[in-house]
Each structure stands twice: as structure tokens, then as C-alpha cells.
Length: 549
Image 1 (cartoon, rainbow, N blue to C red):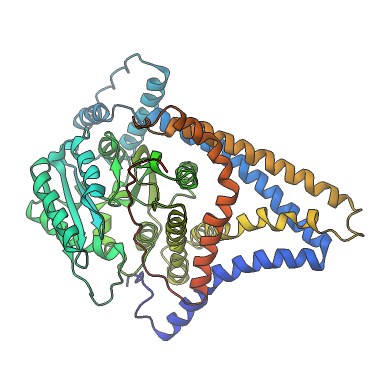
Image 2: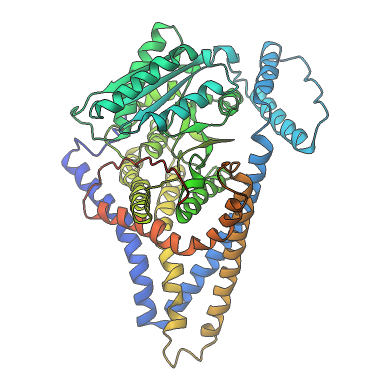
């Protein structure tokens, strides 16, 4: 019997286990923060040893992050404009005649030659695997765009980008998944959009998700699941097998780059066991970046860099925000959870459990753009970002579900269960505790040192170690500054060239931002789960500013 990825309808024993596991992340984070401070105050030498160990580990982590951010950006720079439709045509020719020797790559720039070499290795890998893909003209795309309160001005740019991309829209079905509880004006906007763009795609239709279905919470996963079930009926009528359909679940403000679906199709084709994978692009937040407040801009560009770093490490990849996956896998696992807020990461964990660990995330080095969180005023923007980051951190709700599954799942080896559990637990605790350890606890030996301790060698070593961390952190900020200037979109014509220059010093807002808009929301979310105060889904307001902040 498959594991039910839900905290509802549990037996007494399962309910008690679920409740215990809900307490673990928050209790661990608070124990680390309070315990490290208390340890230093009670036993300064032991406390300092702990702080030194943390700082040394933080040095290693910063080195890792700086190096792999550069590697990941290099991959994005090389692959984002690789001529994906031409690569698909070449792959189609190879599929028709696998024995034919590959054509010699044409001369080009170093960037083009590297891209062709990487792509050539991917093609060789899929040919050796024996898992040949269907031809590209047999592959279809389903794009689901959930709408709760967003106006047409937010949704339409994304649909236009789908239409204007290089991939043939005749093999693309677009579904607007609209909540029944949405305002009449929102539903009317969606109907008009469907009518306007219906002729541009294989199909374009609206699905209304009924409100108040038993067992469902007011979450995005319930809405998009309703839309996916309707789309399944559509593809069945067209006699299109789910194996050949890639489903992309996009936020309402998502605007894909022109090459997105061509790159996605190619990566789907060259991935062995392609139906057992999710495909994660690089999210950027460029739609309104020149109108956003400074701290909001830095925070969201930083989120793109975190995703880039994680894309380089298979052990850290988890689906995030807008992404794509095989429609066959989605149907087999029973669609997205309908009672969980963090559906974007939950679908990865649900799939991993359902397929006994035979599931992975494949990075695709192409961007899609969303809105920077902006609320009009400084305070409203701060509140919106805090609530959004707390909602992201509410992904901690996956921890008790995954652990319950692992405790009873015999299809995954004990080693892999430990490895996956550690990945989930590590990212959860790191998110909530590290900002406080570095920004507050690590200062204790400098701000408060008993007289007998201040003469010990360890007291003199701490500032030097902390200085090394500061230098590496500063190096990381400078790398972010450099890369962010290349990632930023062309400036809007109503702004002068100073707009990009002003973005440089904004990065030095990162330390306080990390505490108040990263660590604190995560600790808040874990504390709520620990106390049994389950959150409700927060729909991030989409704000369009007419002028600069």
C-alpha cells in the first residue's frame, strides 16, 4: 500500500509519531541557538570550542559556496543560449539512425564549442543507456498557471512569453487554474485571456477549482491538482500518452525565456528514465526588479544564487518554485498534495517516496523570471517578504511526513533513507539557526569574556577565525555583485545608467537581511510547527509600481 503523503486521517500511533516529528526541527533549532549561548556563559572554554568549530565549518561552507556559485554561473552562461531547437533537430536525426556517425561540430566561439561538447556527452549517455526518447514532435507540454487573486496584468505577460518562445506552441496546452473563491473580476480576466490566446496554442482553457472540497486545504496544490486531472482527460481524448507529456507548474507571474521549452524538451529527451525526474530551471526575479525596493531586490537575486549553487550538487537538489516534471510521474504519484502549503518541494519528496528513491531533480541551465516581492511602501514590502519567506520555510512540514515514510518504507535502502533524511534536516536547521549563530552567538567571546578566560590562547584565536569568515563572506558578496550585474535584465528606458550602479552597494545590506528576512522567518515557521499552530497559505500580492521607489 502506498504511503499517504498527508497528516490527515492518521491512526492513533501515526498521529502521535507525526506530532513528535513536528516538534523535532523547531526544538533542534532553539536548542542550538539557546544551548550555544548558555554553554558559553556556563563554560566559556567549551562554548568557545563550539563557536570555533562552527566558524571553521562556516569557512569551509563559504569556500564551497563561492567556488560552486562561479561554476554554476559558468554553466548557465554557456548553456542558456545553446541553440536548443537545432540541438533537438540533431537529436531527432540520431534517434532515427543511431548508427550514423555524428556530424562534426561547426566552428564557433569557445562558449559555443564548450556547449556543444557538453551536449554531445549528454547524447552519448542516453544512447548508451538504451533508453531512447520519442521524437520531439511526439512530445507535448502542459503548462498550468494557478490564479487566486492576480489581475490580467500579472498573468498575461507569462502567456505571451509562452506564445513568443522558439518552441512550437502547437504542441503546448495552457491551463489557467482559477480558484472558485476568486473575485468575479479575476475570473472574467482569465476568460478573456483564454479567448485571446486560444488560437495560439494546441489548447488553452480555464479550469475552476471548487471551494470547500473535503480533505483539501486552501492551498495551491489543490488548485493545480484539479487542473491536472482535467488536462489528463483532454490528453486521453487526444490519445496522447502521459509518458510523452511534460507538465510545468508555474506561478502566475512566471515569464519564461524564449529558449525555455526547447531546452526543457532537449533535457527531457537526453535524460535516461526521463519520467522519473523533475526539471529545475534557474529562477530569477526580473519582472519588476527596477521598481522594487533595494532589500527586496538583493534578497531575491540572492535566492537565484542559492538555487544555482544547489544545482551543482545532486545531493542538494529539491524542486523549488516554478519547475517541470513528467506528466506520467505526476499521475502515478497521485498529483500534488492537496493539504500542504509547500507543494513545490512536497511533490519531489512525494515522488521520491512513491518510486522507492528512484527519483531525481535534473537542473536545466535556462532562466525563467518572476516578480520581486514588492508592496508599494517600505513597510508593506517588508511584511510581504517576511510572510513569503515564512511560507517558503514552511517546507519544514515535509520533515515529519518524509520521516514517517522512511520509518516504514522498505523499498529504500537504510543508507539512502539516512542520506535523504539528513539532506532535508540539514537544510531545515541550517536555514533557521546559522544566521543567529554567526550574527549573534559568535560575538559572545568578544563582547563578554570572563577575566580568567581572556588570557587564554583560544580567546585570541577567535577574532582571527571570525576575521577569516568575514573576508570569505565579503568575497562572496563581491562575487554576487559581479554576477548579479550580468544576470540583471536590460534597464528600463525610463531609468538612467545609474540604476545598475546603485545595485552594487545594495549587496552590503545582505547581513541584516539574512537575519530578519531569512533566519527569523524560518525559525518562526519551525516554532509554529513545533507548537502545532499550522499556517494557512499566503498568496503573495503582486504589485505593479508606476515609478521608482
